Amino acid sequence: MEVVEAWERYAQGRTPRREVNSAGARTWLNWTQYPDHGPDESILGDLQGRTVLELGCGTGCNLAHLSTLGATCTGVDISPTQHEKAVARWGHLPGLTFHTAEVSDYLSRTDSTFDVVLSIFGPVWFTDPERLLPLIRKRLTPGGVLAFSHKPPSAGSEPVGTLREARAVTRWDYTPEEWSALLTSSGYSNSKAEIIPPPKGQEVGTLLVRACTGILFYPPLRK
Image (cartoon, one colour):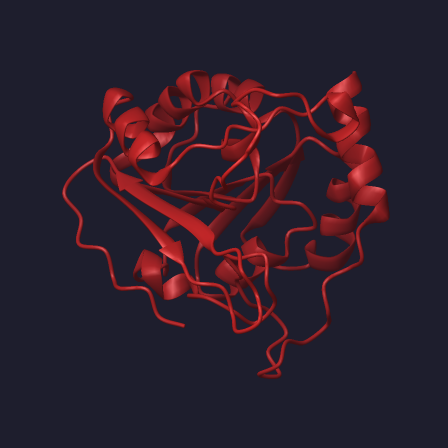
């Protein structure tokens, strides 16, 4: 499958995440494309005892951090290489499991429900949202949260759906307003889309989108 092969090439070329971050922590969550920048998991509220699904979990580093906070975590990634790396590094943690699957297929097959679904530069950016967002919505518990991030569209961006990496991976570059409309039409409420400013010396920020299946007060972004 061409898409799997493209993500396999990407995975094999990735440098492993550092063992510790600038604060000396061994696990952490990073929403942006820049290390040690942007908000942390606190924007999701208390994670103790909650069920979390990460779509496009890669090597599992973000999800591993949430498991150390008391969440029961499931990660899904299309790349077998990423699965192997995730299990090798984080398979010892309790309440953390990884699966190799295309996310739409996984969501269509599973009977599990989740309090939080994450996608950090992951499949929500690379999968037709008119198909994916309703699938996620069905797997969220009442009051559950969907949160995802990716680069915001820039002037001169190619049209939505243009084939990119290895001419196999499609990217949906939507604005905050377009994401809000898509989320509302897919049954979500209380959507909030924000641009996280880049660190000093960088020009491109990060689009962070949150929505839920009920009424929810979102904790503010903290850097």
